Length: 389
Image 1 (cartoon, rainbow, N blue to C red):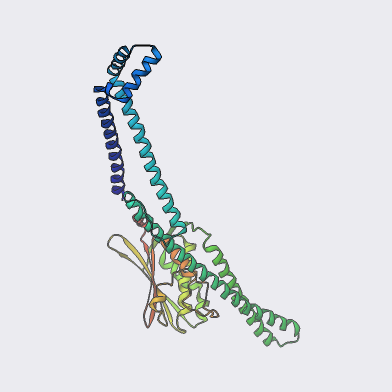
Image 2 (cartoon, rainbow, N blue to C red; image 1 turned 90 degrees about the horizontal axis):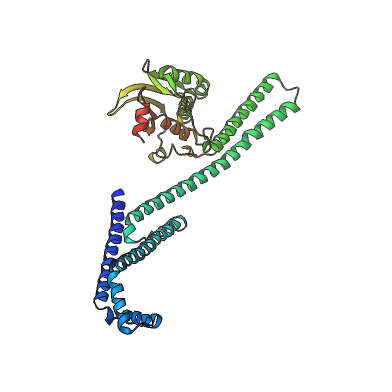
């Protein structure tokens, strides 16, 4: 593209130089002819008559004076002609450039307000036409993505608002019953208190999801990296989520290479792994095992650390698998499902992983679903981020 603009600039300069040379040559030719037959021209005759009238000279003296004036100032008159030619050429070139700028301004306005119409510019601006078409396509794509994202967010807010009513109604109902029946048996009271607590906890989860929705576009992730022992870190994640696993009779096994180090932000990586584990629990089959594997390895250009979360459960269709990391997307379309979150967990996980210079992908078959996370090994983070720019 830079070469195209260099050619365009060269073409403008060559045109300006050729115009200047041509105008100067024309002026010089006209001036020479006029100088050779100065008395035979209307200008010469008029000048001689003016000298006769103003100075009171005879026609012959006026004619001789005019001839000497022309002969003595031939160089000055020639230079004057060149200056006039250059000025005229500057005006023409400036008008041409102004026309180009006007065309570009109109094209930009068209891209903004009439993106469906093709961009039309002069042939000289053909490289810019291609760039504006690409820009128009990118703007349309982003506009569609924003519209889809906004629609998904609005639908999800409506779903969550609907879901908020159910646990809130239950909490109010059970607490009202407990208050109105002070003589209720201890076992019954404990039972209804436990149910009310579960509903309140579910309500807390939904409120937290609302916060995630509002914060996702506003928060800027700032990483505070430090070296971490990945095997110990994953064991801690599994232990801390024991209660969540127990609800579905599931277990979690960690098979991590000992002494496997990565450099990252512990708090944000904890959220990534908790989201992946929570996703495996939510969509995995009851009474099955979740396997977390971590290995270090060598790629073609750099060393990588790979973490794989594997759960047993229904296959995720390929179409949904391609969208699973999008904001506000939920693989479970049921709005009343207990597993239906805000659809931000995996999107945030992807953002955090990429900020660490890593990648996250998903694969699913009839038996297992796997989420694969890769990070640069210690000492490779800056190299990867630089190479990706």
